[in-house]
Amino acid sequence: MNTTTEVADELTQPLDFEDPRQDDLELLEEFDRNNAKHAGAYSVEFIHKKVIIAGAYHKNITCILKLDSQTLIGFKSTVKAIAQSGSRGPLTLRSNIGTLEKALRDVPTKKFTPTTFQNLIKNKSNSVANILRLLFNIWYRLGYPGMTSETIDAVNSLKRPSSRPRARITSDDPTEGWYTSQEYDDLIDAYWMDYESGRVGLRDTTALLLNGQYGRRGIQLATLKVCDFHCEDETDGISGKRVSFPGAKDRQAEEWFRGSKFETHPMGDDLWDLCQLQIKDTISNHERFFQCELTPFERNQLPFFQKDPKKLVSLKNNRSQLFSDNSYSTSPLHLRPGGMAIILSNNKGTPVISQRTGQPVRQFAYRMRYTRARQLARLGVPRVTLQYWLGQEFENSLEHYYNDPAEDARLLNDEMQIILGPLAQAFSGSIRDKESDAIRGNDPSSRVELDGRHSVGSCGEHGFCSASVPIPCYRCSKFEPWVDAPHDEVLIRLIERQEEENNINLPSKARRMLVPLQLDKDIAAVKLVIKLCDARKQELNKQESNKQGNDELKEDLTNKRPGSPEQSSRKKHPVAERE
Image 1 (tube, rainbow, N blue to C red):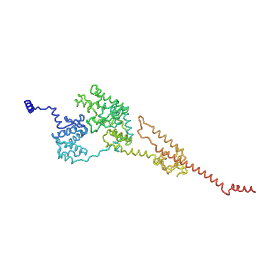
Image 2: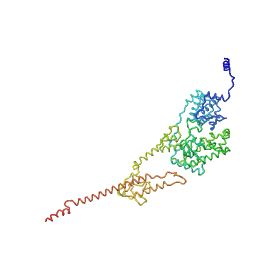
Image 3: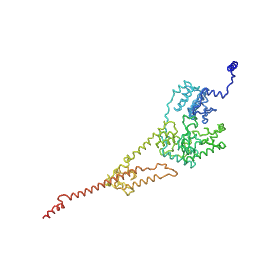
Image 4: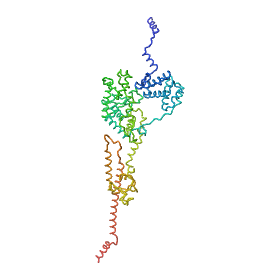
């Protein structure tokens, strides 16, 4: 009993209370707030007059910092909550903060009220007003100070109409939609030529050719690392030389930087060799910058596309802790998407002239993506295959690539060409047995001649046209070809002319920049005339044979008529014998 009493007394005695450690307090705070890290979360730091998003994207917030203390606390808390939830990407958040900063620069404000918000969006575009409205609604729903119910009611009452998004995929604008086959081929040729001539460097050429081959987004190219290029074993069932692009717009990504699923594609020898040169170059540049030789693992973590040396120096000065930890795998070393967009605009390259506009082709990353996807769709691949190649989670935009009226018209034309070809003005004139049968058969000036020596038909039109005879005549409704004319000579000339045209190449070009002359319809017209003339010849021969047969029959019938001298002599002969 005594032992039990002593234990009970010990348990009921008060414990000496000590303040918990700071680490424990932070753990308790996180536990109480239930601030579990969401997929796609990233860091936000407010340092001096800047906000640093995801450790890579800086934005000056001088005007935002002039808000009163409570409103500023609410703004910072809202920004951190958005980053923690991953509901907005780092670039989108930076853009939204920049929009608010510019609005406050134009209209300085201490706090947000119905009146100040109305002044804030005055003379602003619908896009700016809607960006601020969405940001303030998130702020209000999170319950942070600085955004009252009266203010948010005013914000929502001043809602502007949303601008209709531009459908570049289906746009008929030749400056922003997909490239034509001719434009695409000329661009690829120009990329290689500019690299060989030294006009464009290795890094930019590699980016342009990767974009031209795979049509990836700019951010996917910017976040490539050396370790993303493989030639051994296999990745996702693909073996041999290959590249694995970091995904983008993956809602299930655990990290915003290279956290999405990778998209692996095989690679040809020429492009692979160029990428190997770029890998050697980026390793050499980074080792020179860090002034040390990196291990194989560290080399694999380096960006595939290095930043310009001046920007690396500036980055090192501002983020010395990053480099003291030898963290070569973080995002600050990589090109920003904006920098990659400048590279893919190819401002340094040789201008490629569009046959549609007569102006230099406007280049940016998404045009190549639209083009390559449309090329695959035109090959007839299923939608699920195109979705896999594009690395998209949903099929909502795939229909645009298959909604291709021009390609549908081409396929329909190919299918109906055999049936409707002869009717499509291949030949619409009239066959004449001889010159005298033509409308102007008695007029020597109506003759259509080949080389001024061989006449092939007559022109039924009074006067002269601007066509260079006799080729266009075969597709003219006024042309009257003669049956016995040497149309075969015209056909031989046309075929030889087409072969010469197809074999002409400009210097240093894989294909002609101008579309070759097409004589297909003229050749078809002449062939049809030859076929019709042959049929007419057979008909005339048959008529001639029938005529000769009829003449012989008439002669026989004439010889057999009663009263003819021969018949009379035959009748009298027996009588004479009897006499």
